[in-house]
Length: 440
Image (cartoon, rainbow, N blue to C red; front, side, top):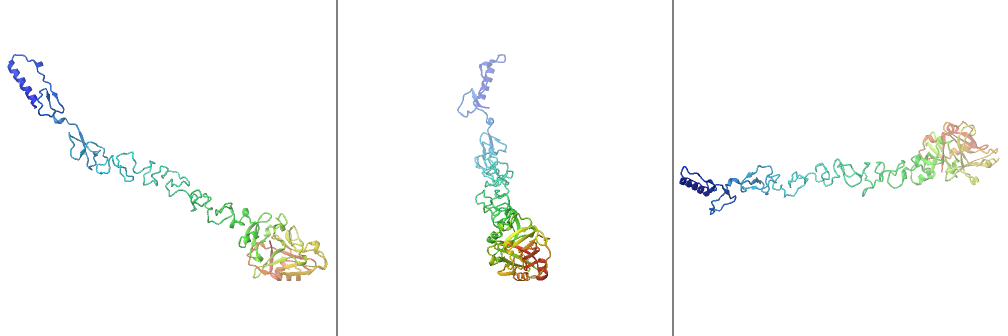
């Protein structure tokens, strides 16, 4: 009990003794209430009207600071004391009291798995806030890049995190010209990019700026070559091509024999030409007549030219609905015009591989031509003539691999006393089974 209370009690007892047992007590003369001084610690204070508080009135809370970072453990139960115990602080702000680098004053360290600054709003493993942790987000600094994003072409980003920006949409291994350094001129088609061969498909396959050029020329109806001469000049090998005659047609181009550039007519087209074939030739002074031999070499030819005496007249190629003997539709190679050939006693014929093959027209017959029939047509004439023997004897071998489909039955007509026989006769007599025409 404090000194002040003890004094008051003693005074009260003394007053009672003086009054006696029967005296009434006047309680209003003595103030027995206690006025407390909440922070009075002065030992010299003898004011009998006040009293000092008891220490058990302290209400301060203290939290353990296990890592010594001056921030208390937010998960711990506080200690109530007037003064902080050792390793205790007056806050509960530390979300990890076992790590000194984790507290409200610490800087957030990305991708360490810790809430370094004890602020849940500061992102650690999803810095761009797109809902994908860094482990699954290929660019955690860009909210437009994550596995759920839609790939944006040619923006330099791997938007959907599948392995790079989509700069090669068609998957041909070449980036689009829409991005820096890209060379694919059509990134929607794997059949178009630099380095591909050009093909006849209406596309610029090699990205050189021209559609169906180069090796594509002549390989289809829509990219037919101007001529076999043009293909020869482009160093193209002998073979089957499409060439513009009166319309794009499948032909064989012989680019080796006699300087090359020869258009070998497909007999299947005989009867379908809309105009005189002479209009499709750059030169009308020469025609190759190919012969299919029954023995090696299987392909021979004779280069037919006009006799010097008739050099004023060009060779003529024409389409006829019928021929002598009823052979049917054919192509006719005329050497001397009928108005000129109908002369009795005239020396006529043609050159074959540089040799003049001639006869004397004994009756003025104006025929001076070779006929080539459409497939399945022709007729049989087996009249022997020395003219035909001489002509066949001038033939020379060719290395051009002309397919058999380009050969058909033929007939030789050379005036009166010249020649009139067909390939059926040639076959039995000379081993020559069929013929083909090459124009240039």
